[in-house]
Amino acid sequence: MTDPIADFLTRVRNAINANHRVVDIPASNLKKEITKILFDKGYILSYKFLDPAKDSPQGTIKIALKYHPVTKVPAIRTLTRVSKPGLRKYTHVQSIPRVINGLGIAIISTSRGVMTDKEARRENVGGEVLCYVY
Figure 1 (tube, rainbow, N blue to C red):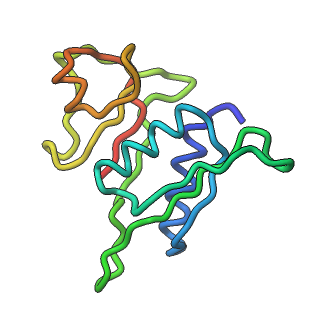
Figure 2: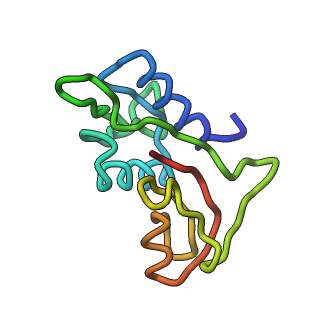
């Protein structure tokens, strides 16, 4: 697999399209940080990091997806990968993108860790734009 972040986003997107409640994803440190951001911003219901087992040496992330209780509309409408292995997208602090005029989030990998676009502006750092979520 050449792009594990795209695989993470695709697994979540496919689970939402199939109306699944839980999705299992192979773990990595970057995926764990993205999962924490999605939980903190209210896009997922909960998550659990499972320890490595015989079948998966790196461990697993178990994500409970969030849906509206009455209309069953998912909290995540769109997950878009921005920076790809073939074309990396870097930005400095003055040109950090605003997703849907601030209603969505951009997840950015900076020298101070993985954070949202608002946190990156506050900390005055730029970095690689990983994905847009709204």
